[in-house]
Image: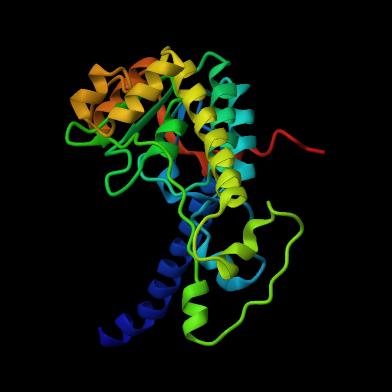
Length: 292
């Protein structure tokens, strides 16, 4: 009896190994055939709180550190592709705490507005806009969407812009270091950090003009999106920040809702069969709209 068990042992192991190999191949084929397909009814989702990058470095460490970051160009092109894809029924994004620069915000904002022109809904939500600091850029991005929701305990940190400039001339004097930095004309202001102790007229004028230009763009965009006048937006910014219900009353957000409630609302618009798909994953499956 023992001899029979020993004889069947190797055969049983081989059979189990063969079954596992076949199962692995079957799973791989299923994923290759179906896993790379875009579902027939899908809502794209993105988390802009993680920020975006202009490009990913070629080195291994850079790719590892930035692997989960959204690429700015990919975001813009993916939304462009999604606008003409009948399988895509909408877009939902988390936008509350973003460290994106204003130029990056404007790129994505324009892409969201272009996506909405296809008639598909786009909803933004946040736990809070600028909970531990100003939320101007994040809220400005959110106004590109059809609707904005904030968590009931959240707030909208719409507080305006502030520029700061460090001056290290005093420290250099104490160290006995004489800065020898030159610049072309008075508005080339990089050198002033080392050569001055405070703002002087041309430097202050330059900074003020840049800040007012950016602020005017933000005010204009918010006013157009929220159907307010620019004067009303400026007055609201002077009163900020706003608690959740205050933001609703001021028409800055459309309602108070948690994440799951926001997802339920866009699913109602998109249809019961709708599935959610990450924006980056959709881009990988659907490909770029610009083939040349």
